[in-house]
Amino acid sequence: MTKNSDLRVTLSLDEIPKKWYNIAADLKGLQPTLHPGTREPVTEEDLAPVFTKSVIKQEMSTERYITIPKEVRENYISLNRPSPLQRAVNLEKVLRTPAKIYFKREDLSPVGSHKGNSALAQAYYCMKDGIHTITTETGAGQWGTALALASSIFDLDCTVFMVRVSYDQKPFRRTIMQTYGAKVHASPSPVTEYGKKLLKEHPDTTGSLGIAISEAIEMAVRDPGTKYTLGSVANSVILHQTVIGLETMEQMKKAEIVPDHMVACIGGGSNFAGFVFPMMREKMLGKTECEFVAAEPKAAASLTEGEFRYDFGDTAGMTPLFKMFTLGHDFIPSGIHAGGLRYHGMSPLVSEAYNQGLMSARSYDQTETFEAGVLFAKAEGIIPAPESTHAIKAAIDLALEAKAKNEEKTIVFCLSGHGMLDLAGYEKFISGTLASSSRMN
Ligand SMILES: *Cc1c(COP(=O)(O)O)cnc(C)c1O
View 1 (spheres, rainbow, N blue to C red):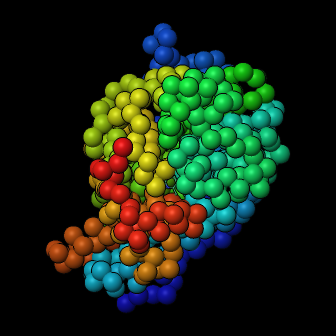
View 2 (cartoon, rainbow, N blue to C red):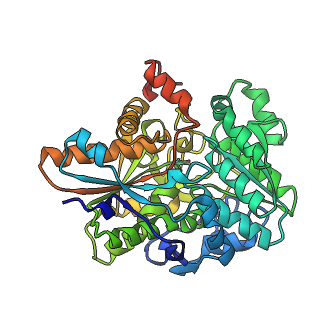
């Protein structure tokens, strides 16, 4: 019997978690991040020109639970938190699967994705530390959008370097960022030395997240009142995103949902890690058998095809060296529509969890993920972000595997964002002109 209360599990504002979960307290064997010159572990002073000090402290912290500042908790309402956990009843019917499928609705945020969760925290810490301007890169535009709104909430200036291919594919994203008050440059741009150099050497480049990161860092190090913020990958970002997984655990407890699989798409790792890490702690404690599945694009398959080694986070080699799964810092992924997944590396925390076999990964071509996205849209009415369609594809595959074995599995996935600003990709899919990732540059 399906109880109505299972179909949409909500939390009240008072039930928003009061602390984030830091997996660095529980994950053994983490390798330090190294200074690129000395190859010694990075220090707080090394990072100070780039990041604000509160965020650096979190980056290095091994405290298990970190209090969410009151100002951040109070502003979660502007991101539509707490977000519901919803059952995909019609999708289950279409698939004729005995599996139950639930999804966590990060698509309901006004910025369109989960990225607001960390943007809000980072903008708050910059304001508190006396910073006047924040810079960043954005791939598909979601991080830039999130940071533009968070900067506006905490009254900071915001400059965004937007990867060229997305700047051209998603002009409305730029308009949203500008509406929230941000300055937006197509990357590579003529406003940094690195951007100028690249434009001269490769005038037709589609850009990449790695290049845009290099530009945003260059701008931050020029001025002590300007700091750089990362939208994924970093330990601090993942810490902030655990609000997703902590809410989900509370909701699963309320509705007596016992997950067999938790699934999320993965680019730099923040929605995946934020969603699953609190539950991974339960797994490390032997309290659950839940399997964690990361869905990545074939075009940037760092977990399934990369190597676990030290590499730079950006293309120019300005960041510290991270121990992570990487395709090489000079790898430029093809221009798939899931711009937020076009990254050569992977969060060191996720990389270590993967290295230890605490989770698995699957990779997909963009044609099969759009197909899954359209199936989901027809069943549930929600047009998912191209990134999120990777999670949907993996959840559908797991539901079909359960059907083949006639098993009543429970699958919970993170719907990391909506695709209402990614309709150009859907348009191509519908008209049959969407290229397979394997046939792109
Ligand atoms: C940015 C983004 C992603 C990928 O980033 P992660 O850090 O891997 O979560 C996934 N989905 C959406 C909607 C995004 O905006």
